[in-house]
Image (cartoon, rainbow, N blue to C red; front, side):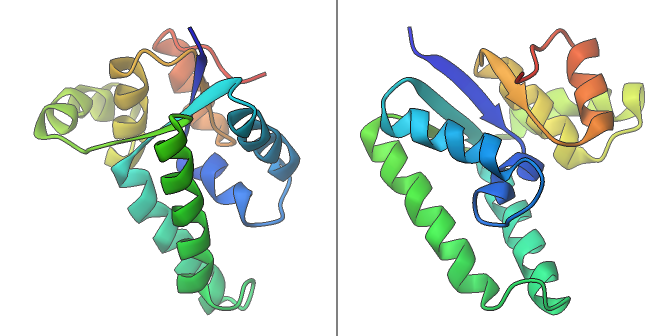
Length: 146
């Protein structure tokens, strides 16, 4: 069975934004093209990534946020067609199952959805560059990307 890695939004945007951790994310994508692993993310992550790109354009960190997002989206669609990525639809059940995590760990709904989607999809590990989310993921029994 191919190893599956859940990418949270903080990891996903590093595919296009040159930041600490970009090389790690790039290597994950390379391994997808080599059919060594499968990336998993929630449809919600795509919306959240669009927000991040838009904020970065407004701060003059990147030009053309919409075009940049489209490049990332197209790559994920290609990987999905190749069977090396899965964009999980956001279902009401996932939202409902995420709500207890909000109260338990003082999380935003986006973070709770990411944790719950990773669990529901039975991913091998969870990739995030958010320290608080790393702690919650570990507390929920998820393996972190090393």
